[in-house]
Length: 171
Image (cartoon, rainbow, N blue to C red; front, side, top):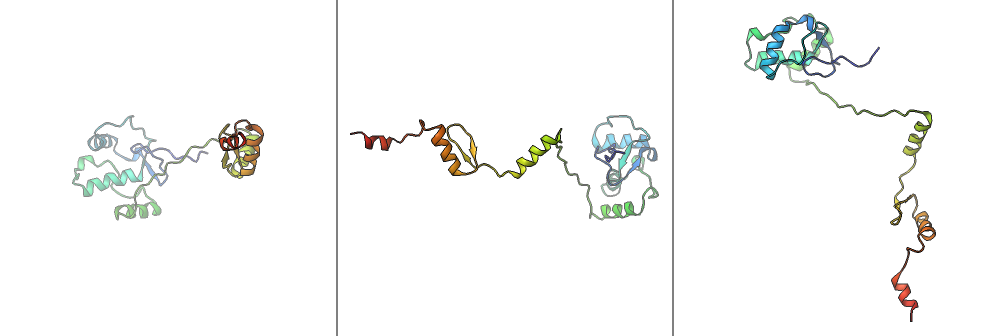
């Protein structure tokens, strides 16, 4: 069983807070309303199993009641609240009182490790402290400044020159 909720026909967001089936609405009026409100037709034909989230339903009702769109011809939603359970009725009341808005959080897609070894490396990388000290010659990073100093003395001894020292040694 999938945990993903079906998408709303109108807003195309998951119907996590509840929805009604398109079989319970007047599909022709819905298409006409959508054209009038959004300026374009629905992308697909409305099927009986399509879902319309409560928020789109309530927003259409809100526009009809409070936004001078009181045209009876455009009422496509159920006129009674028989389709709602007690929790949905409370949610609807909060919506119309202005205490609740539809809110979507973008979920970040993450890549899961393909093997246990890859997972172990990811965990080790998270545990390992960042390497702060960087060699200016080769770019290698070190955890401690003393390790960087030893590296430079060994690997880049020809690159370390002090013009002051050489001028003092010369007559």
